[in-house]
View 1 (spheres, rainbow, N blue to C red):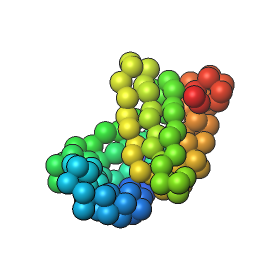
View 2: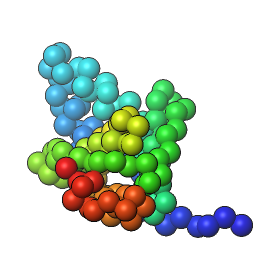
View 3: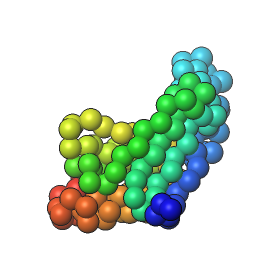
Amino acid sequence: MGIKEEAIYEGGPHPGDLIINILLGFTVICLPLTIGAIVRALWLRYRITDRRISVTGGWQGRDRTDVIYSEVAKIIKVPRGLGAWGDIVVTLRDGSRLELRSLPRFREIYDHIAQKAAEKTGKSINAIKS
């Protein structure tokens, strides 16, 4: 029997991201942004637990990335949609980055990731947050 994980957030991007990008899609210049938002809404799913960060995405949701908190070196948050949702960039110890785009409750999730990463790496929360 495995250890049960407690989910902090499970779901897709914030619906406001799709709505705004569809409205911007009426201008031909913003059409690529609209297509990107539609693809994210259809196939991008996040699962943030007390043990790991999982991102399922790619074409038809076929790619999955799992990151454990001991691999996190730094995180950055960027508010979007007047602060209703935001992006989080997780930098790993090997220098690679994982982008969590259009997350609802991004402030709460950011604090959770920073706290768990600090516990697992022995660094201070301030060293992980940027």
